[in-house]
Image 1 (cartoon, rainbow, N blue to C red):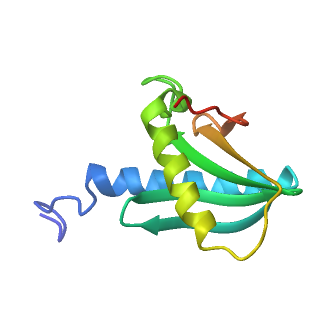
Image 2: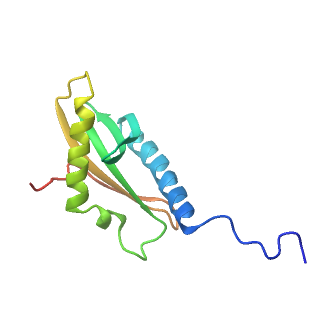
Length: 132
């Protein structure tokens, strides 16, 4: 038997999912920059949650939720951006804005879905509305 026989893989499904998410966020940042946006912050975290990407699009501050899937087998990644998720992003965006000294003429929430296989395919939805 070889030196690795009987060993289990050290990667878990959770680790693979985090790696996929990180790859998706890296691709999303590049995509948004190619669209002319300036990335201000990535992975803003506070006790109440996280915003994946915060960017500036002209005078507008944009809070971007990134969802990445390997394939479409489980449906579009944007299907995972629910009303509850949008409400959470709206609440987190208000917390982030309170901590800023700059004035922003407008804000918006975008979602960016990425399907990795056979090659990265992007779906960008701008200005998602949050029902009260």
